[in-house]
Amino acid sequence: MQPNRTVRTRPTHRLLDMKRVSSRSPLEGQIGFSRAVRVGNFIAVAGTAPIPSDSSKVDTWSVYDQARLCLQIVRKSIEEAGGQLENVIRTRIMLTDISTWREAAQAHGEYFSDIKPVCTFIEVSGFIDPGWKVEVEADCLVG
Image (cartoon, rainbow, N blue to C red; front, side):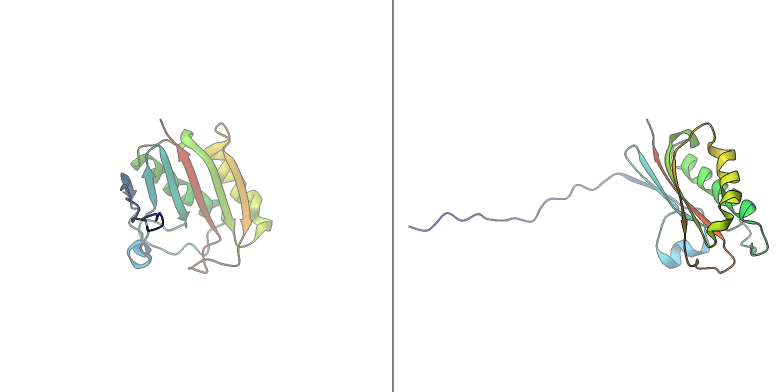
């Protein structure tokens, strides 16, 4: 008589229905990422740098102006994924100099003062482009 044996099979993975959004950043293909991804009713927006549509440099821009551009890109990405700014439940503001948080907070408040998602400000040592002073991430729930 042979002992009872459990036969393990490979788990079957259900493919998720994903919608990927591109901001057409030159870095998306190089790094291999999407600006935003929607799975079901959840939208995740990647760390969004202040990259103007003409790819011009922003190193002379204020933190406020860079944050506003990041938030404009975030908003557009959320809308392309089928959401609205009102669906944002969390934002993360990453700064190379935390002492400039009030400038980023001013821009954030212009977009979210009525929505009030949870928000975290984080100081980082730097970004891919040394001229970037801020990046923004966002998470949303829709429907």
